[in-house]
Image: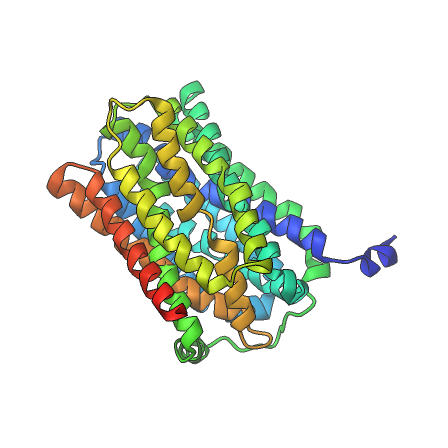
Length: 398
């Protein structure tokens, strides 16, 4: 039986496993922002501190993605995925303590864990996927992000309503720990390219970043990653809070609107991946998506309490179809441009700029919220950055 398994095409199994872990990693990272309204009401903290929580996650993610390349090469993509899921579970357990210092620790530890998910899976799938279909393969894997957000948007608020927010965090943490066990049987099959004797050094991290920034095409993708991840973080981190505290929605209703909107990102990602594989150059498609992100951000910013639920859901859907649906196209481009054998390290370096965006934009959003008491300026700031990249990208393509 084992001999038969080894002769089978490993790509479908790897794609399924990486999609599943991406789903759970996203659900784990998004749980705290999605139920932030309940946490804030219970322990009495300012809503603007959600931005600080997201910023701490982003700092941890930045450190992980900068340095993860050597760890992936030494220990293997599957092993590092397991380490990341375990760290995410421990981070959620720390937040469940409701003690403010441990909330910060949980954000940091969870951010360290979740950030390894994408570089590890990119390293594995980039090695197995034929270049012609890589955008589609990466887009299918990245459907784990909207599916994870959907699960978080429905399950976490339901657990809060049935029990409380601590139970919700502990339940999601338990699922993260179970995923570590479920991935173990796959390790021997997929970590065959690891280099146990590889020396880990800060010099390798610096050299990797220098290689990425020295490549014009990769440098442009770094800028896209900064703007796109930053805007996505605003949507996933603040939109439910915006509906609850800004527009007066109940938490379960807001979570349902969010989940419905994010659902379109699943077929959306697959469609964008197919489009980039067959009809439109990936760089052109990314520029067009950036302009769509800017328009949808402006639409989200003008939602009023008098709008019917379906209209708010439509605005959220537009943002989901753009700001939460680009990943497969961009990551496949990074994998295509990466030096041989360094897909994970190159992806990590580019993703570090995404973590920088996830750090800067929530802090700007929180500052605007504190100064104005309004959620709209923060969404407009994120949309403006995306618009800048989109216009510049189209001009460069011409």
